[in-house]
Amino acid sequence: MFSDRTTKAQYYLPDELNTEADAITEVDFHWKVIIIYVLVIGAFCFLFLSVFQLQVVQGSQNYLVATRTSQSQTEQLAPGV
Image (tube, rainbow, N blue to C red; front, side, top):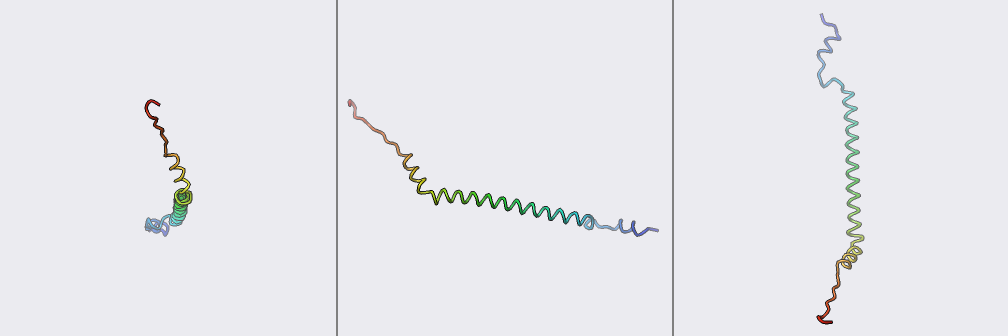
């Protein structure tokens, strides 16, 4: 009554359809996620090293410049002079 092709087509489960295409999509997705993680970690390391250099390596120089520029000198003259 039914040929082999129609019975096989009727009994395919949804999980069995496009398994190769799904596997390719999963691999592509994993590479995209890995690339994003690498970029985020790289940006974090760049910012951390920049802040470390400003605060620790050049901190004493920046502190001296800040203390010199924040001081102001005012002269008060006596009345009548």
